[in-house]
Each structure stands twice: as C-alpha cells, then as structure tokens.
Length: 322
Image 1 (cartoon, one colour):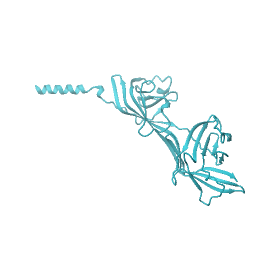
Image 2: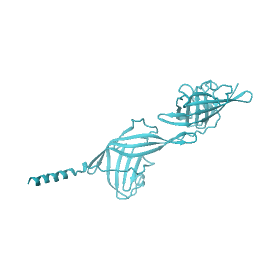
Image 3: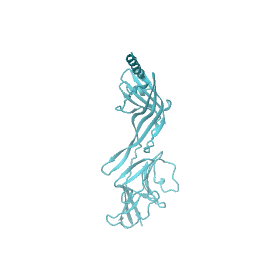
Image 4: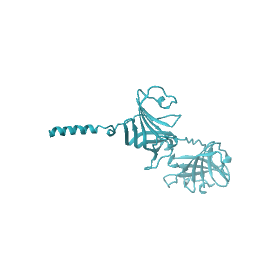
C-alpha cells in the first residue's frame, strides 16, 4: 500500500512540474538577416512563419563606438521602445511588416509583447583598409543588439529571458571624400596651412615655424615635426550649407557658413612611430621655394571614432618666396 501511495505522489509531482511558466521556449533568429523599414522605426528579423520586431528611434543608434564595458542601455517600455514576437499562419515577408496596409495574408496567429527589460547596444566602427598604403576609412557602424532581462507577455502567462540576442544592425557612415589636389596655401598672419575643395578642408594650425623655411633641405633629409594638440594641429572638416572659398580662411573670425558638419582632429604624434610631418624644400626659380609636405602614419579622431591617413599621405605643396 505504501508503494502505491508513493507512486501516486511521484506521478502528481511530475504533473505539477509540467507548467508553461517553467518551460523555457527557444526563440532563434541567429541565421536571419536584420532588415529595417524606410518609413518607420522598425528593425526586424523574419523566419518562415515568425517575426521578431524592434521598434526604436533611429537616434538610438549613435555613429560612434561605445566605450568597452559601457554599452548603451535603453528601457523596453512597450511605447517608444517596443519588442514584439509574432507568429503567422503562412510565410511572412517584409511587406507584412513595413507596408502601411499590410497584405491580408499571412495573418498573425499569436503575439508575445515585451513588457520590461533593457535593450543593450554595443557599437563598433566598420572599416575598410587600403592595403597599398595601410590607410583606413570608416564605412559604417555595427550595432550589436541584445535584450537583457526581457519579459514577454504571452496569451498563457509570461516568459523571461536573462539574455536574448537580437543581432547586428549596421548604419552607414557619412562619407569623407578627401578629394584634395596638392596645392597648399598659407595664411599670412596666422600661418595656418590649408588645402580645400568645395565641401572639405584639411588644415594645420600653429605650425612649427622651423618646418617652413626658405632653405633647401639636404637630399633625403626632410625637416620633421609631430602632430600635436597645441602645435602642428591637424584638422579635417566636412562642411554643409555652402561652398568653401578662399575667403573662408585667414580672416579674424570664422564665417558662419558654410557650416562645419564633421570635425576630425589629428592624434598626437609619437617620435619615430606615428603622426609625423615631413617637409622637403627645394628652390623653385630664383626667389621661390617649394615645400612638399608628407604626413606619415597619422590618425584622425572624432569622439571614439578614428581612421588612419596611411603610411605616407601627401598633404601637398606650398610655394613661398623670400
């Protein structure tokens, strides 16, 4: 009799453990590509008869790498920042997600709604490398999205995930053309060096006067200096709302237009290693001198973003006279 009672208790225990709230249901969109709508703030993944939707303002994705150990954290509030997992009665496509009036089929058969938790975003720069000169350019920013301690409200209760990877979302970067010729100019008073085209400029401010001297340099022995924060300040600027002209430079005040859209500063150089300015001077006629300026292994930085100008970037040629 005791054995029968024990078996009954064991069976009841097993039945008691078969509770939907205790069963961890797996959601796997790892192999699905991240897509986005052009008319709203939806980012989504599709898998046959399922969709995973993230509605979040585009401004949440900042084009600047996050500091290691300090990701961006955003509250899931089911309002501005929403996470939804949907089931359909047929194969789902982007039209079912992005269209103002979605197709009638497939229809949504069930939905889980994120009601709490955090959206964690870790951002890194996506770079391309020119192997010929080891220069790099930022082509975009990768935002790795993970839901932390997310709670889904379901038709039969709730489901909690401590860590729920959504995946990567890439945003484009602003192109930096670097479409300069090799003709340099120098302001008569400030001695600022500048090279410019209609929408961008590369300048060196407070240049060391010993670098630009009307004396020929010995063969293969250029004058050298280092990029710095107080002297030999290298700056790249991209402009909008106007066209750069010679009148923009050398004035007592900086014109309001065109407006600076982006500004990148040269990282301080290290002797014999990086951020080196080389000037080679030759005589050009009877009274003129031509100074060829090469910038070696320089890095330009904005916020947490940076890129390399390469092993040898020819800044240009400056002509001076006695």
